[in-house]
Every structure is written in structure tokens, then in C-alpha cells.
Image 1 (tube, rainbow, N blue to C red):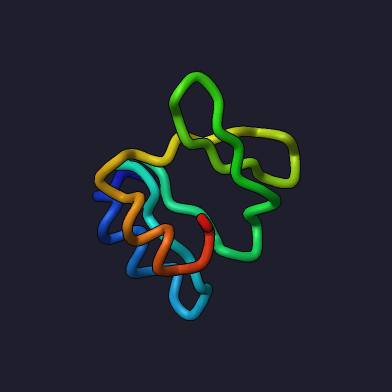
Image 2: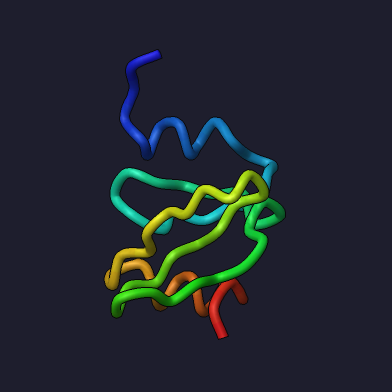
Length: 68
């Protein structure tokens, strides 16, 4: 399926989630932990995959309680 990320995010409701990067959205319940490595902030998912959190999305991640 080819669509804009913003449109895809709209289709995820009512699942609580957060855009953490221009290319990544995560369900809040899927965030296992936050890792800082090499000056970057990463969100770790249940399968061990790590996704970057862009600096521009850090305030929203903090407000959502993903980052402390």
C-alpha cells in the first residue's frame, strides 16, 4: 500500500501511538524501552528492533511519557 505517513497514522486510530521520525510511527504499547547510543535516542520494540527518534519529535515523545 502506498500512502502518505500522515494518512496512515490517521488510519491507526484508536490505537495510541506517536510519530517519532519522519518515517516512523510506533504504538505506545509496543515501546519496550528507550536506548541512548552514540548521541542518538532510539526506541526499542518487542522484537529488538530499534527505531530512531528525531530531535524534532523528542518533545512529543517526552510529552507522551515515552522519554523521561
